Amino acid sequence: MTTAIPAGGVVPGGAEVSAEDFAEILTQTRRFIRSVVLPREQEIADSDAIPDDIRTAAKEMGLFGYAIPQQWGGLGLNLVQDAELAMEFGYTTLALRSMFGTNNGIAGQVLVGFGTDEQKRRWLDPIASGEVVASFALTEPGAGSNPAGLRARAVRDGDDWVISGEKRFITNAPLADLFVVFARTRPRDEQGEGIAVFLVPADAPGVTVGAKDRKMGQEGAWTSDVHFSEVRVPADALVGGDEDAGYRAAMTSLARGRVHIAALAVGQAQRALDESVAYAATATQGGNPIGEFQLVQAMLADQQTGVMAGRALVRDAARAWVDETDRRIAPSVAKLYCTEMVGKVADLAVQIHGGTGYMRDVPVERIYRDVRLLRLYEGTSEIQRLIIGRGLVKAAKSAG
Image (cartoon, rainbow, N blue to C red):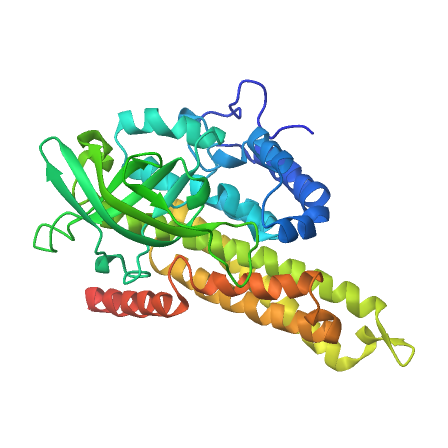
């Protein structure tokens, strides 16, 4: 299979990936997903793992670093391009995207946006190549969508930091080589939130990774708890060398990630719609295809409307991020609408399939379970509503 990166590992065109180069990347990614991954979705679900040959192919295509800047070994896609790629990732099992999602997204972007030059040199190239799997360790039993509630502690001891705490539902934790760990260094005060972020190798003494979580869906996408028991790291493990960078890094990475998750939701919705149309055109009742029934057509119409609205919204939000015109409200709007939308589209897909749609090994049944998680991570739908509402009121007060 051809790779998305030309020989030498850098896409031509300098810091920006040209439209022509990106079109080729998108085409090859679509071909990879439709011809290689999609036929093996059931294998992935049954084994609860991504096969090694698919993982290797993804590495060769540069998918572990598509959103990492070219100077650090990645493809250097911006968020507009990332969103288009994510809609393709969403067309198949979400376990595929999860395999390299933290490298490109919430973990990798912390380093891209807040790391020192030395931290970037040390970690970003192996992250972009897939040699290192980076895992974003933020969520705790008592602090999920609101990082301000963190209880994990980091205490300075001479030139080192000592980290203790529990993290929960950490994506790729069983596979991780590096944890990007958020911990509180002091109570919130006038200086800031008192939340720092540290780079902790997975093999550091005191790091314990729990058993893989048994989830409702998304088989092959591994999560688990991680325990940090007096884990000692050197001073240069503090991201950006700044004790107050953690909260900003979390908020920025999560906001960017919300556009990506919205795009994934659109991809899953498109797949559910395509499965529904194909079934409606071939399954019969009383000798007629069920797609000829007006009530079935109405369900298909609602699915199509949701998909098209979601795709337009994702593209608008991604452009606003790249243009730096809205990096707060638009990502939350896109994430809220698209993740709620895909739940409705998946529900309609099961309804259109009837009893068949409730059977395991049928794609829409898996999609129905898998997409439920999209409304929970990267900030729940409730959190998105608070961000949107507060942002609108704040803007109105500022304008007044």
